Length: 200
Ligand SMILES: [Fe+2]
Image (cartoon, rainbow, N blue to C red; front, top):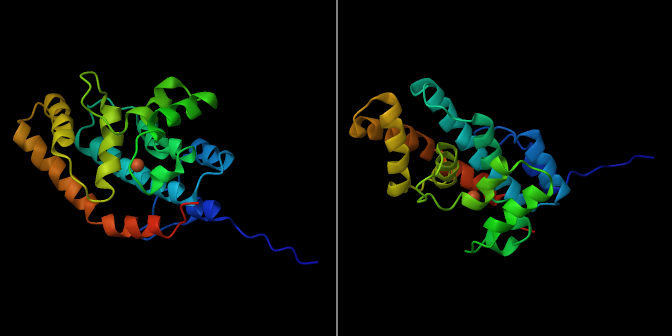
């Protein structure tokens, strides 16, 4: 007897290499999405944002190696930031912020360390005086993946880069602008990738 096993849209969204290729999510993030039966659209979105976060970290590692950044936290944060949309799926295709506290609650409920769960609650706001570089990078990835530029957010990142690089702000801004423009060039491909997966 031939048994045909069909991958679900969620499995496909997690495994699809993408064009251009998108990095796979960290295993612990993918396992959480499977356990939550997350909508495939959400997994595809998280793939896109996680890949952009990884690109930002690569650039930082080359250009600002002295900036202390917890790479694992940024990658996990990018890979799970919208996980609260499993509880509020209407916010996958419409506005709303109920997914933010819900996401942190879900992650804490699965035993995720608070330092890694916090991105789910903080990814949409970056005006706190004690916002961390890791939180800024997750927020930045969640904008530039689709080519969106946020001056206030970018200025906060520039402040950190200028201090650690002993650079003029304008020079740090030009460098950041350059890498963000390069990442934004692939925005349409990432939007197409995400749109291929259903929201339910
Ligand atoms: Fe997002």
